[in-house]
Image (tube, rainbow, N blue to C red; front, side, top):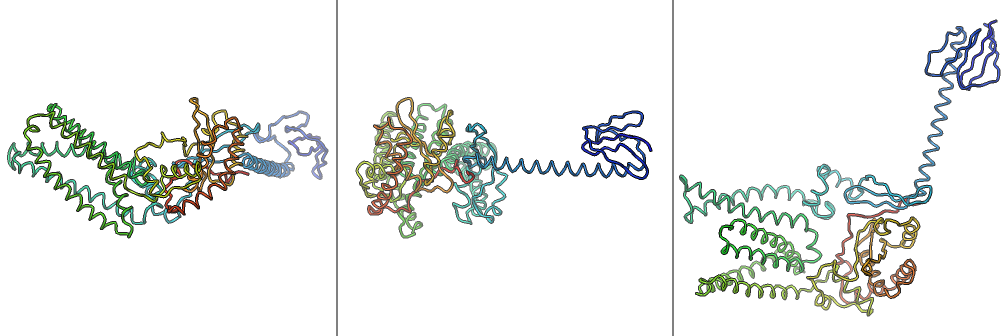
Length: 534
């Protein structure tokens, strides 16, 4: 019998070896040792095993395999338990998730010391069904900025199914139309004496046509910008943008009038004037289409537009006739200052008449300005005015940012609670507004002015915007109680909202307003979801 000592990790040791049996002894070690007159130290898994008697080879391979399986199962179990613990901790500490329109998200959660932390990641938008995602999958590679520029907000759910097919065919149709326009312009210039169809004169006519069409092209850039960046504004406030169109068009006419003073700069002045007029047209056309749709109570929009064209053409013919007669006045022909004074006087009359014509419009839809008037009247006097009185009182030229109280919609939670905001504040806000589709918070500015910050939850509607506006006006009219703790004041305002807003909706209906015509858009750029909160 030969004497050996073998230690393999947690395996048992064998102190004696014979061809007939192996005798185990109880021991363990972190290394592998084999001895027979000499000791040999081995590192498991990394070094070649020592030369052992043949009878040991099978046993060692078997024990080695058992050890590997045991270690693997134990490691998998530990990793699984750790993942479950991490997942439980994540769900327990996650507060909310802000989802942005570009597909990114920001998660607010607590660490071990209950500090408020944020992390950013990406998510897949859940808006739209499977068929819509398959149908419009070709737009998945287009940057979101470009999609927002060329497609309506909420596409494809905000338009009919045939919208995209029509626009894809309309685009090359318009291209061919403008190619024909360029060729016809060259022919017209030749017809009035600028060149002919042969020789150098033909080249001069073509060059003049190119300059003239280029001037139109610069103007088209203005319309492109208006349609791409301001397309979502016209439905809410068409009266305002129709009036602004005339202001900008008047500025364009000033540049064109100045070409007589600076003939050397004719092309840049005319181009800037044409650009301003093109921007004005980009504001005018969609605004007036909304107004036409307001007129068409019997789904007769086409007829209303056709009859409006009759009125416009008749006014155009009469205006051109009077303009020609005015030009025949000797003083206007010989004096530039007289011409400018006459134009300025008539233009002021034009702007005043435009303002008066827009003032008589009586919209029954509730946009932000009319909503402010309605809510303020109810909070102060417990009265909701009818749509006739509300439209008359509305100042459609005012800017939203200058109205009081100052309410900012669609802000992030981080901005709402401030840089030093705590997780306790976030939890209190979420608990306080658990029954609402939004969260409103007050911030005191350095100027002493109070700003109301509002962020909306997933699933918020125009009615949610109206509720937040009512609460903001109530808080604004109770600013004398600033000494009261802010959360106590918010809680009281929500209690007032429960009863007061129901009475507001009742009076709204009695005054002739339609709750279905609330055109208060929820800012889709940022919404938050608390579904992952435990």
